[in-house]
Length: 421
Ligand code: NIG
Ligand code: FE
Image 1 (cartoon, rainbow, N blue to C red):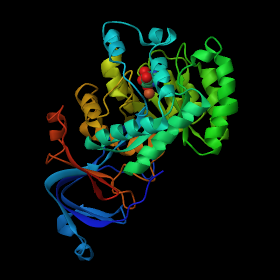
Image 2 (image 1 turned 45 degrees about the horizontal axis):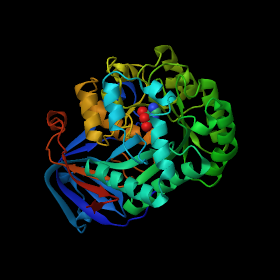
Image 3 (image 1 turned 60 degrees about the horizontal axis):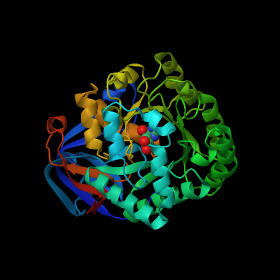
Image 4 (image 1 turned 90 degrees about the vertical axis):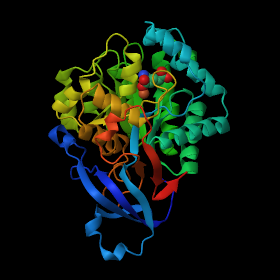
C-alpha cells in the first residue's frame, strides 16, 4: 500500500551514508545483524522516487550530473525507520492508568476489570471515521518528524466488524494522504469485548465468521495478529484465529510472551508468523523452532521501559540475537503502554540499556523491521530499486546517535525522494 510520487535528484555531500541492506533477500540474524555498510562522503541518485544508485561521491558516474542536487551539507543520511509494530489508530489517552501501573498496578488485572484496552475500545467506537483519520494522520506526521517513514498499523480497539473496519480505513486514508508506506494488521483478537464477556469462544466464532472473512476478502489488511497471553487468548485459540486469517490471505503475526510464556512462540513457528512481538519472557527452549521458521522477533523497548516495573530484563533482545533469530525494533505506539512514537528513543534504549550494538540496532529499526512488516520489497534499506524513503540527521557519524540521546536528530525526511515538510 504505497502512494505514487515521481522524482529524480542527487543527494550530495552526505558525511556518512548508513546503508542497511538485507542478507540476499533475508533478514539479518546472528553475527550478520551486526554488519552495516557505512560509506563516507557519499551520494544517492534517485529516479522516479526510488534509489537508482549510491556510493562515494568521488565515484559518482557522470550520467547523474544532470540530476538536480539536494545538498545535505555534510550530514548523515540513512533510510527512514520502519516501525514494525504500532497501534497508531486510537482515541483518547490513559495517562492515569500508566502512572498507576508505575505505582504497581497490574496491566492484565486492569484489563480484566474492563479498563486498559477496553477503555480505548469505548473511545474508538464513539469516534467518527473522520476524527480517527485526522488523529491518525497527525500522529503519523509527528513520527515522521522523528524519522519514521513506514509503519505497520494494527486495528484492535474496535472489536466489532464495523469498528475494526473503521480503524483499518482510518489507517489507509491517513497513509494515503501523507504518502507513507504501511502494512495493515487485523488485531480483532486484542481483547474480548464486553458484549462477549465470559464467552471468549463466542467472540472467536464471531471474529472467524464475520470480521476475518470480510477484512480478508475486501483486502483491508495484509496481516492478522492475536494478543496471545494468559487471560486474553490462549495459544490454541490464537491458532484457530490465525489459521482462519491465513485462509483469507492474511500473514500471521503474534503478540506473545509480554507477561507470561504460554506457548505462543511455538505457535509462531508452527504457523510461520512473519513476526513474533514482545518476547520479553520467552522460553529459550522455543527459540530453535522459531529460528528455523524464518520469522523476525520484534522487540519493543518503550513498552519494556515503561511497563515492566520491577521486572526489567533488558537482556532478552541480546539473547534472541545469540539464538540466531533476526531482531527488529518497534515502538508499540499505543495509549496504554507506550505513548512514544520515536524510533530514535527506542534505538537509544536498545543501545544504552539492552546492549545492542549500534549496527545491530540500526539494522533492527530498518531492514529487519521491513521484513517484520512484510514491507521488505518496498522500503527500509539502501538498495537499488527501493523507495527513496530517507532521513537526514544533524550528526556526521553514527557514533553520535546514542551519544546525543534524547534529542531529535532528524532534520529532513524524504518520502519517495520528496522532501516532507
Ligand atoms: O502491545 N499488549 C497488548 N497490546 C498493546 C497494548 C495496548 C493497550 O494497552 O492499549 C501492546 O503493548
Ligand atoms: Fe502491541
